[in-house]
Image 1 (cartoon, rainbow, N blue to C red):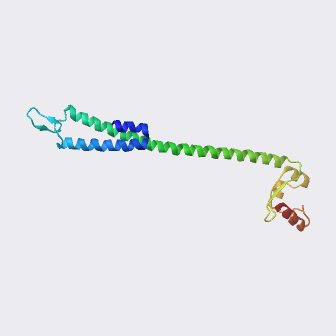
Image 2: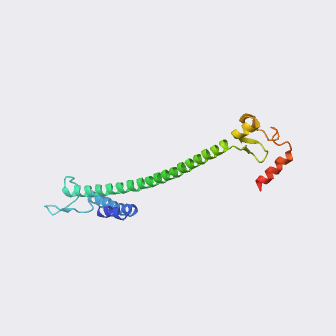
Image 3: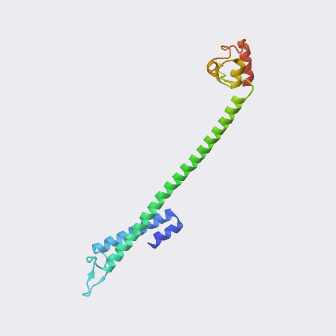
Length: 178
């Protein structure tokens, strides 16, 4: 019992080993005493007495020691298992805090970009390079071209008449990619 309790001072793994050893020793001796293989004393008649009388103080001392050892093992096992669970939970909480902070940064950045894009006095559009399809336009685009957002999105600049020469559009794309 003292070794298993002292194991708490040296860490859970040492405590588990010490408690396991002590529990095994207690169980072995208790089994031997109860089965009559080990004497607990000499009776008044000079005979060796075994654990046949469970009202004996010695019997209950052994049972209490065994129970205390088992309780120490259970305590350490729970502490070990719960410690692992607490570490895993803390790692999950930490990962969640990082993800939440990253998501908040993305949302702030997106709000800033949206405000800059929509409130810019210059004509702005977001166009897919692969096929020249317009993905988004700002308010200035709508005001200067007379086209609504719905009319412009999904079409190319050539289809809506912004670039009458398709070669000019290809030149702009090449410049953007460099």
